[in-house]
Image (cartoon, rainbow, N blue to C red; front, side, top):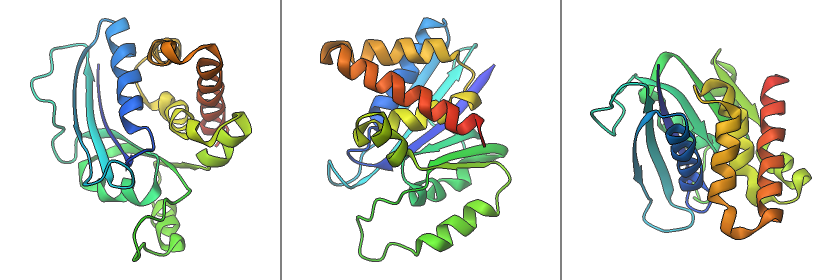
Length: 192
């Protein structure tokens, strides 16, 4: 079993937190994991991507070769499209449909949505709205992880345990909020 995942978004959207949850969950299931990340020029608002490779066998490289990612998980719709060359032919894109308008020449949102509609393996959800309904728009990254969880070869319980461990120092209310967001994202993805 092997899962290669590209995580992407912009700084401040919680991409590194998603990577951390995946790492904790993979180790809990005695899987091998390699992870690499690239931060944009600025801490908030710059492009952020992470390669996460999870396997039952040792993983030699932390970088995913072109056309080999089984999943692109994006918290921002334009960012997912940047990484299409890494997506395998049968791979899935799971993305937030709400843009983070951080550049003056951001493409028309309609053209981005047309690109998604042209793909058979794409799941788009409004993670910002779902997270807000759960109690905080900041939890949109965990909504997206929940939505993508059905394409990741890890048990949802392991991912939730990873989330609990990651946020343990922030207290039970933060843990509960993020668990609720994860579950709401999972439900939104299954409903599509």
